[in-house]
Amino acid sequence: MQRRKFLASSLAAAGLSLASRDTLRAESSASSLESGRQYYELRRYHLRSGPETGIVHHFFANAFIPAANRLGIRPIGVFGQMLGPRNPTLYVLIPCSSLETLVRLDAHLRSDAEFMKAGDAFLKAPASAPAYERLESSLMLAFRGQPQIQTPPMTAARQPRVFELRTYESPSDRDHWRKIEMFHSGEFDIFRSAGFSPVFYGDTLIGQRMPQLTYMLAFGSLSERNRLWRAFDTAPAWQKLSHEERFAFEPIVTNVTNLILSPAPYSQI
Image (spheres, rainbow, N blue to C red):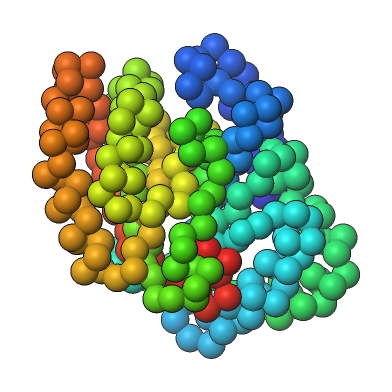
């Protein structure tokens, strides 16, 4: 499998491309560390319905998460898809302060004997019954306004919770940067005032359908989610911000992907 080599080369190519872009996205590893901003890898495992799903969950609960934690990578979120296309799909959110550690994660895991033993059934699944059908991955850099993952209070209390994963696609780099500016110009505060629990905000550096950004919100229930969004949409501060000329001169977001996720019992988020 050439995933690690591909990711490393993609990162190098992306670095050259990003170097000439606006500083909202052209952040180096060093400047990210200085500001405390994390990198996020979001993996999407497309699964088959059947016994293989048990192998997948055993792998993440007993092999992947413990091994990643030993490398200092935590908290790791694992989520099933409640509402959205292409079910069953498993989402794995991996935060890391070091880009190099994140890129070399698979290599580190392969040298971990405990990981290899615990993940044997997943790693050695035969072609006739693979553990998953396909894997997609995107790399993000945390927004300045929320530089690290925030674990929602419901997680620590092990209370019921649902998550909303939202991806905003913009028609141009300028519009993408303007949408990020919008978050930092008051949208963060409106979310908090309305009672939301944001988990992360990430600017996609490598992924599909770019330019785009992705963020995640946590709720105690779907009914709470609906109530909070109504409060957000009608908030005077949002009405004022969304009609400012610098954000309303044209559609700066042209496509929104919205997924409702549920945490696996062993998820750390």
